[in-house]
Image (cartoon, rainbow, N blue to C red; front, side, top):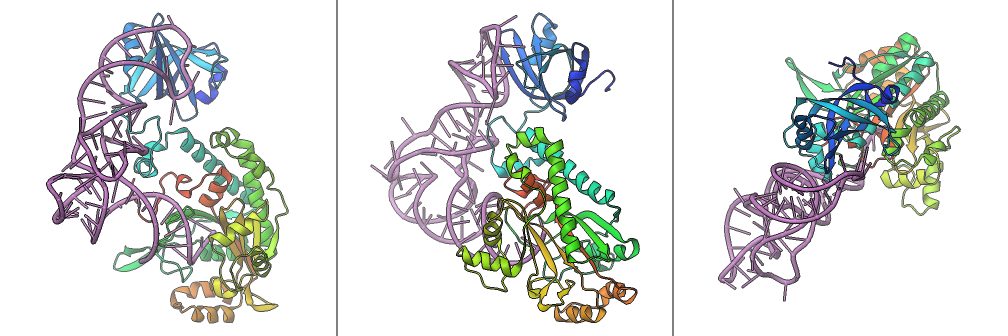
Length: 432
RNA sequence: UCCUCGAUAGCUCAAUUGGCAGAGCGAGCGGCUGUUAACCGCUAGGUUCCUGGUUCGAGUCCAGGUCGAGGAGCCA
């Protein structure tokens, strides 16, 4: 079907040639005996010019009445034209209709979020969503390449798990034959096992949180990339995270400039993202927040407002380390110089996008870990395999997880994470 | 779970103090030989979210419900 056809992103290579383009009708305009069809093929949009004296009356009539989003194969000559936004247009001599569309629900004018979310499967065809999906593809490839090139091994963690990875958050329960299973909240515990086998690994996969969160930063199903390194400590994880963020920002800037332009992203903010990033301890962060008049006491977790104020004080992403152990997960290693602190690190994105990375150094002492599990009221039996990692050659190790959607929302400069994934799962949305 | 706001044509919205249901886009028809969310003219298109109440009269006021949006907590 694609014989002798060309995609719109490569159309300049066919300048002056007669070629075919397969795509969908994105828009139409007309004037007298001339018709303009905007043809979209996923790689771009090109204007196809239909002149009454160049085509048969049947084709001219077709160009007049073809419904939006009908699929077609357009044949014509590729012509340079300064009036075109991509520099080229097609002088049509034939249009083959593959499938005539029914009346298309998404019009050229504005729509509400609820309507667009109900039509997410069609909304993806718009230029803005097209740009976001391309940036997402570059971002995930860039993140994986960063780890691949550093010698990390890619490992998949299970989606179905026997128990919680982090006690406090809610789990999706599913039937597993004659018992229950839970959708994973994090690949991390399995990543630790893999790191003891392979040295440096990363897990890339979906994560499920049954929290009733209803904000622009939350999905119930989202994707994380989670590196884990044996024989490494907190500062090593921070350095790795800094390198990752710089890499994905630089790759998206270099490879997605047309897409970032569609989204009207202020690139000057991204160009500032170079090492080193500010590194604050939690205690220093609390002091800064108090100086800025926030009502917060040592020991409280940083909420959305606090994160915004803190990241607003810097023009780069900010690391916050050494949180109170009480507000962090059971597997976090305590600071040997202060038992109240955990060797944890979060990375706050600029411009109010909040936490995009969370991680730290893991507890490597069997006794300490068993004690923590008891403290958190967790059942030890399903975690015996995890404790085995401390029984058989335990080593200092550290890692983190980066939320793909939050990182992408920040880099793309879009307001809500629901647009950063093709089919978002939200508290009240499971369709389409 | 809590707080705030909203629901009127396929879509986005308007409708003054409670007094004839409106516009733009989209659809149909017509016009225009270079349009850029093209433009111009005409036509069709309504269970005003649901249930009940107040009233001579309810899109508008009251009560309950449903759905949606924004935010909080929690988190990436």
